[in-house]
Amino acid sequence: MQKLKIPLFIILPFLAFGASLFHGFAPVDDSFLIVENLAIRAINWENLKHFFTTYDPELYIPLVFVSFQFNYLIGELAPFNYHLTNILIHIINALLVTRILMQLLASNKSNASENEDVNCQLPVLSGVEVSIVNCSSRKAQLALFGGLIFAIHPLNTEAVVWLAGRKDLLSGLFFFASLTFYLDFIKGNRKAYWLSITMFLLALLSKVIAVTLLGILILHWLLLRTRTRKPSPITIVPYLILTLIFVVVALGGKARVIASVTLIDKILVACKSTIFYIYKFLIPNDLTIIYPLQGDISLTDMRILPSVILAIILIMIAIKSLKKHPVITFGIGWYLVTLAPTYLNIGKANLVFFAVDRYAYLPMVGLLIVLVYIYKSIRPIARSTIIIILIVLSINQTNTWKTPDGVFRRTLSIYPESVGARVGLATILRHQNKFEEAFKVITEGVKYMDHSLLHMNAGFVYAATGQVTDAEERFRTAINMDPNNPEPYFSLGSLFEQTGRSDEAISFYEKAVELDGSYVIARAKLGNLYLKKNQTDKAREQFEKALEWNKFSVEANEGIRRIQDASI
Image (cartoon, rainbow, N blue to C red; front, side, top):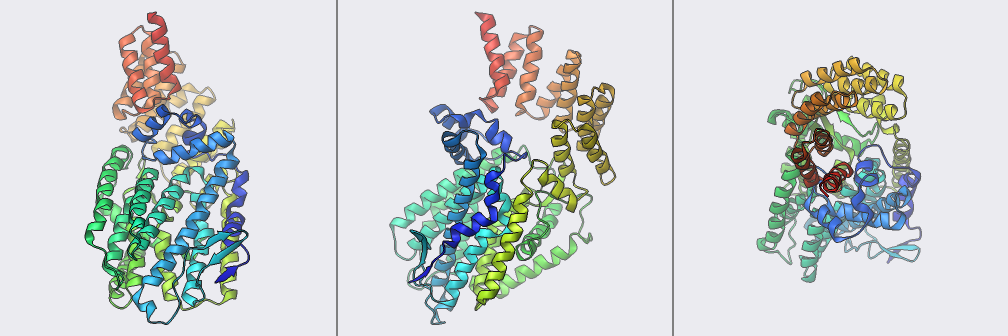
């Protein structure tokens, strides 16, 4: 038994991401999912029922909300305990990834012929030591090194330090646990089979991306079956059933938000994404929250063509390795299978992005499998150097999340053309009453791309400074540019409501809810205007429909209460 005297799997992640413990809530989704989410503030049947029967609004993540409930129970809205939970989950995930790497090495036929002892177990925390059982072989040490890379890699920063990234961490936790139990099962542990299925269900309840585990199990059955035990294909059936159920569930939420992008565009962007994540895994610099791909997309575009060529080469390597090096094929297969669902989610609000750092959380393990397999050894000095470099990069990346505007300023420093980053930064500046700077951020973006979101946000600045005519002009421009987007209709309706033009406000609110039936605040505002006109039935209808989407809507509940009080 070899013992690492320093608990590296605890210390190193805290070195890499520990600064986030003193961060607040991020401006992207954290407020909606946590701060303003009244349902996390009490653990009761009604709230649990709400989590398990609704979306967030696009993702089905009930267990993530339950985890936020426990955080609120412990420290209410103190960000520290939410961030601490994220880091602890990530540490457990790194340990599970290490065990998976060791299990795969132990079951690999080609490794068995190398006369190396690869019968390694999960690193187990024992007091202040981390024990690695039977891990004296070079391959086992590489597996341990692979787990440490996962634990501190800058590409995982977004998943760890962004509280909304909890869904990727929690889903990953149960995903990895399910797989490691399955690998135990095929070695003869029958009880592990049902534990694996249970963990798979929990993974799906955390984020439906876990459906990709079915693909991993099929790849393992095809490529890496052990000689002593070949599991029956029937063992895959429960995973298949759960996968089909949750794919249907996932489509219910995503159907409303997936951008209109052609199939060819999705294929081309998928190639770019595939190669981009590999590049950032090897050279993790210039990481940011948004990776925009603005303008026309075509095969001849030099932003796309090299990635298409490299993606084809990657697939050829996987095919070429099939017979002699199935572990390489399996690793590449893992990478592509777990990345595949993200290919469908490349745009929102008529904006295309080609990557999201946290989307690489599961796929990274496939790259680590290949890395551990192809290297015979890495000198200790090289390993230490790599670890130090990765930690420094992760610390720097974590610091970009320190302030509300930091993540967007970081994006604009790398991708000044990013409409999404400009809108996000301008929104923060506007809320800080920095109207002149907010307007400058927006107008500078027009020279890169004249987008409806820029005009809409310019309208927000005009409205906030009392320039109603200019605000109206900008909102109408946004509508003309993107007539199927409900946001500018709502914005114009809100402007008219605030300036006493209630009839016009009603017509624009009605158009907003026509385009998006789940637009809760638009329905609530519409209901309030109907009440002012004594159209009680119409008002009740809007409040009730709003509550169907969000039963905790303060505005809709207040509207229902006013109607009830008036009827007494």
